[in-house]
Length: 517
Image (cartoon, rainbow, N blue to C red; front, top):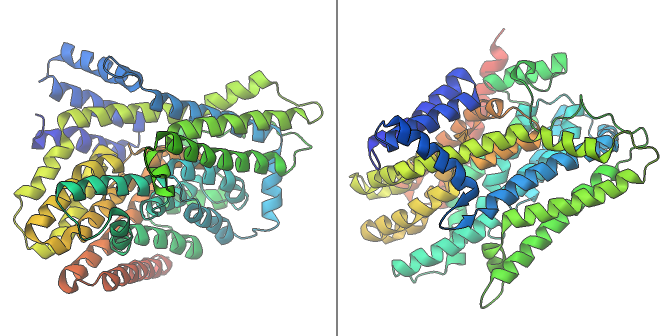
């Protein structure tokens, strides 16, 4: 079953169930069980053992010991829940909402706040998704913007901006990967950093996705189920679907805000979180760097999960200090910690299940099978970037990982391009980056999508389904852009065409929706 068309079954089945049942735990569970049965050749006992081992390996493996990266990330989520609870109990979230409502007085403005912050915070996608959500949620809640819309704005700016920024965890990882690929293929025409910068205009999906966010925010373009969520939020002030149960990080009905809460009770912990996390990222990068130290090597070698954990810990300690400076706090430390951690459990459950099905898909070598299609497929060489965009998109969709897709597809893209058309090396690799982000946006098991849902306080399944139409619009525009590039070999013209197609499709959809009775 490994490395064959059958390896697609768990991912495809999971995606079908997500769309048809809207039950994320059921869909992930069925995908894991199906994959385990395929791995064990339908031996039920072996499949059960495989599932237990896969779960164990998330936290501990006999070869590598404790998986501290996962522990740190889960720990950060718990700290984020505690931080959210403290900011709510101190009255900081409520005060910030009142303060922002006097300055951001329209729904359009409230949606532009997370859109702009998402572009400005380009250091890391995890950090972006969670910090932008914490700052923006009081603003969008005041203007009755649905949490699904907020999650979409966060998700569709976080990965796209980090994938085109050389000074980010993504950019550093990609540049480092490209260095090894260039050495292996004896590519000496340009250095990795120069190549990365040249590839930026050809990462068409990233630009299309971010443009789509600003169009949606400015013109209130609500497509498909997003319109249902937005109508519910405006008409009933229900920011989430009340029939879908609890959501991560939502404490409005649990924690009573302090009457003396001030804006600084939210701003100071958030700024502390940002500064502490970035400084620790630079420090861990410095400690892990051998040889010449530059800003790029610092981000290439940084440990994001450790940085998030200790940055979150510092912010939580400070927020507790501010909380206890208030007179007669309404809630005890124990209450705040328990409620805050409890609010994050849905996100943690989804993340663990996503890791499990990711490991199942990895064992089945779904990515390897999709990559082999590129080598076996006969095509006009000028369409190589287009083909790689589609393949990388489906791979990231099925596996739920952009970085995993980078690792598999970037070497293949470079090798194929060197053999059939050396001038296509950079366009081919750029298309892999673009396709990986597209697939990541569509996948219910993507870490970034899960954390975007968490940061926004949205049901994860609602976020996945509402983001799909916008992601596909950006992907269609990108595909047309890669067609133009195949015909003209002009990157700027191809990018401008992509952006124009996004605008044109948006105008058509807006016209159609406004024509409906």
